[in-house]
Image 1 (cartoon, rainbow, N blue to C red):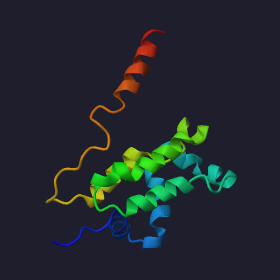
Image 2: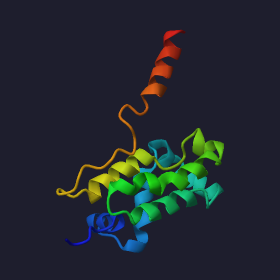
Image 3: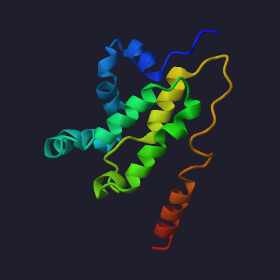
Length: 138
């Protein structure tokens, strides 16, 4: 059985770009929408701000499927906990859910088992319930 291509190889083939441009080309596609708008200004103030995001993309580029995605993101999540207000609260960073969906879509094989979920069913529901209960009590 031939080896599955990496996420980076699939992405580069789909978009017709050179492999060395993978992380820079993929970054805007996996940022939160408002982070895409803020990216030029943030990069002008702090050129290294998105370095952790680019490192995560390079690591995810080596994945051959979505199964190892959680392990790939573990270091990024630890760094995120120690990072600035802009990264944690304002979410000027990669959306791990967007990145997971992109990895799963491009590396999925029709003959492979379905991937394990990186996010449990109903993820985000607790935050939504808290927000609804806060507004309901006002």
